[in-house]
Image 1: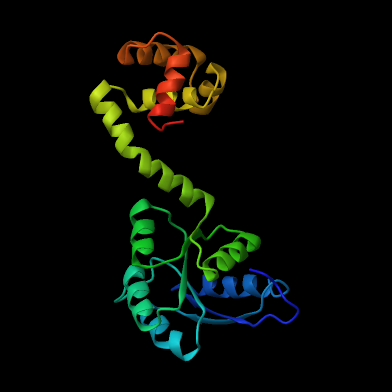
Image 2: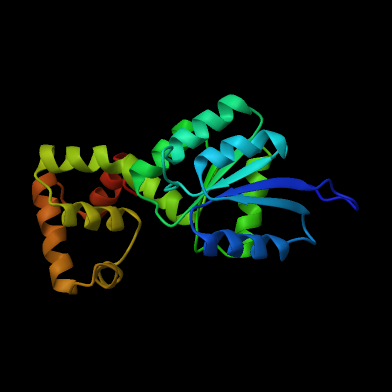
Length: 222
């Protein structure tokens, strides 16, 4: 978002059932006033978010996915966007379980940020979502990438009788990791890594580390 000498304020609506988090977010947003001016309204339920989003002309809703009774986070997003389609939604949560993230994004959220975020990251997320971009914090992006690869992992386990640990070793081999680096990353001995490597060669009917690297890349593990 480009700044200008007198930027229009952003009407930001916080919906979170925890008073401490609502007040903490207010304070955090106030600390960002030099970069962007916020007019902040905070409510403790999805129903109240729906009620006030239009009257305060909210630009963005900062929502805790676990907000309760009777609307959950996804239903809050769907109903609020039905009433105010131009509203942007950024989920701000302590949990990045795949099912929650998928439900929020499918409902219409523009981004997902964890509550351990620092002020600059919060500002980055808000700016991205206001510009119509999708935003995922690092932890959520990594989780989604891992989930996307699960069908590949399950196929390897079934088709080639690989263990999950062997798949992880294959992934790290594909990324060019040495035995020592793999051992450190998995908290095992180098001898254990050697054993996994040998099992991979036998099960995949390969004859070299270079072949393992090639296979890992072809299967999208590296």
